[in-house]
Length: 357
Image 1 (cartoon, rainbow, N blue to C red):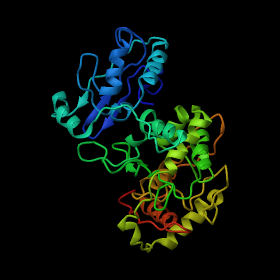
Image 2 (image 1 turned 90 degrees about the vertical axis):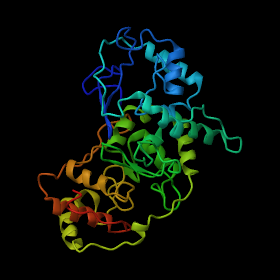
Image 3 (image 1 turned 180 degrees about the vertical axis):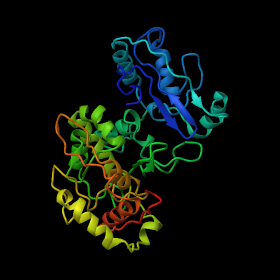
Image 4 (image 1 turned 90 degrees about the horizontal axis):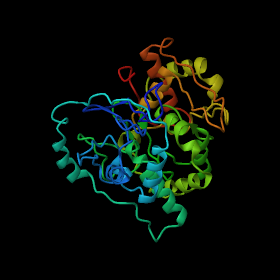
């Protein structure tokens, strides 16, 4: 997902990853000797993955998620390296680094790493089951879920007490929801099978993957074994309950509710139902939907503006998609219908404005 440019050769780099500090190009991971990993030895690859340092010892920018990949075992890192070495070599020079000063000065990472990075392979918890430990290893390490599903501070580091509590993805403008299934969690009410279905098929009885998560499912999680998916679900089910944000507790229905209801009946109800419960396996429910009820409202706004496109997977080869309404509805209309959805049925979350749209 990061190391393949749109329309480009797989793993050959060339894709610029946007950050609040400037763009960072993803490097070529094919075994081309001049522009890729062709001359790399495993020791250098392990140093990058585990310590966040390049082949010459240079500090790597944490847009490369070594803050999570440091948990990957040496055996798994060796397997990844062997796979990358088996790819067809592609000659592709990486674009120049696009970071702004002073972030372009690599020595500035010394202070960042001292504050926010502690290398260490995942250590199993003897008090937990084998399935839990496997799920934790996959979610915290190889899956690097926290890189999106956690809030970040002004220096781009994930908040220490925000493990999988949800956060807006910088520069991408989607919200990755909280992943707790317990009270107040973003996946409250989800079963283990719901989690497995979403990661395997891109759709479950509770909702569908779209936006950046659709790319994750299409490129990655649909290929994970069922045993590992169930292990990840076991781990997510163990995440603690969440406190309800103060803004959500002080719920007030907006004045445009009737306007939003009219738009919903005209544009949305045919698929999602007047009760917001959708059609199982075809049209996702909006009632109690994680992405509808996330704190910012950005996911619902973007879905109405740009449409919703679940991933094509082996288990769902022709998913139903949602058309975009950016040309049919005004900003005020979109805010009204999004607020109607976010404040109807069991949904009780804060309003968005036309300015947000």
